[in-house]
Image (cartoon, rainbow, N blue to C red; front, side, top):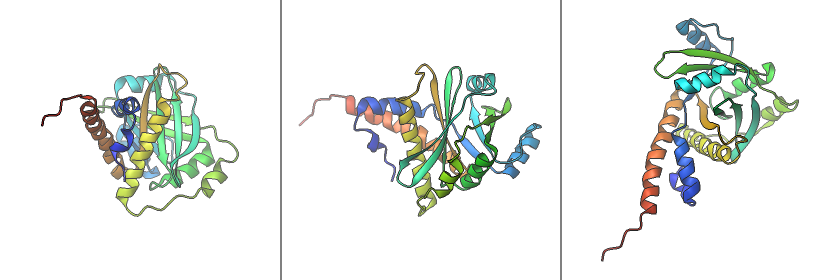
Length: 230
């Protein structure tokens, strides 16, 4: 089970991680039918197939839009036993965008198969408030063994949707912690998105924001050196 106290053993690391929770953004895995519907609703031309919808603020969207063909790093990481995630790292001018796609999420295997077949992924990015939308189709450099590797990867079955959600949240925390300590350009601000179907995406976002608020409160209490009254 996920527990914020797991991250409280080192106050400095915990503070840094919890500050990053406010930099978490929502992301939804869209089926081909949902992508087609999104295209009609926005009167946009979107590539056929699976996609990822993300909501960013105006500055973040502009930074992503400025580099229409950003360099993308694709990797598979397993922060929890038998629960691998694919990560898409997209560094831009001022921000480093990180998408985390859990292998066990509904539809994720189909999305991964399309990624392996086409070598590209499609992002539909909406500005907060619905004032603007952009679509990006970017190359995802895959090595020759990628398709065989992800098909052979064992994924632990989930006992419940709650367990699945908790594993997604934990993987998101681990991804954030990993990137904050290893970004090649520390001047870029990290934006992390755990990609999930619509029913999971909002609870993940809410969990990160609640964790930030609760975690900061716990840290402040831990740092206070109050006299004990008898």
